[in-house]
Image 1 (cartoon, helix red, strand yellow):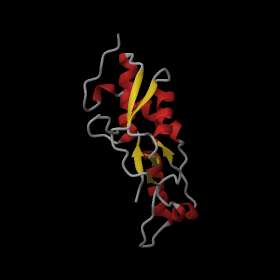
Image 2 (cartoon, one colour):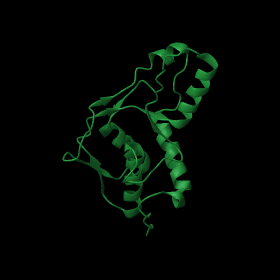
Image 3 (cartoon, one colour):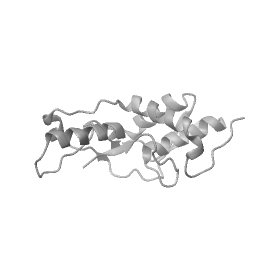
Length: 158
C-alpha cells in the first residue's frame, strides 16, 4: 500500500488532481498571471504524507529483491506535514512573492493520513527524495512540459 504520490507526468488539472499537483498548478498560474495570493482549500491543518514516484519505484524494486511474505507492505516516507506547511514549501519553490489565503469553507478531509512504514524500514529501505527536492524536480518537469498540461488553458506571461 502506497501513500500519496507526486512527480513528473502528474495530473495538474485543477478539477481532478490531488492536493500537491493542484497546489503546484495554482502557484504556477498565479506566478504567470502576477496574482498576489494563492487560495488553499480548507484550514491548512490536516496532515498528509507524500512520496515522490521515483522513491516508489525504488521501494518496489527493493521489495522484489528482498521481500516474499504474503503480508502487505506500506510504502511511504513515514513523515507527514500540514497542508499549510506543504503550501508554504510550494510557494517557496514556485512563487515566493505570493501570499497564502485559506478558504475554511472548503472541506479539510481526514485530519491525518500517515502510513506505518515500520515493516519497510526494518527491511532496510527508506525514501531518499526530500519533499522540497521532489517539488523542485516536479516543478522543473512542469516548466519543461507546459504544453502538455491537462485542464485549464495556461495563461500567457505578459
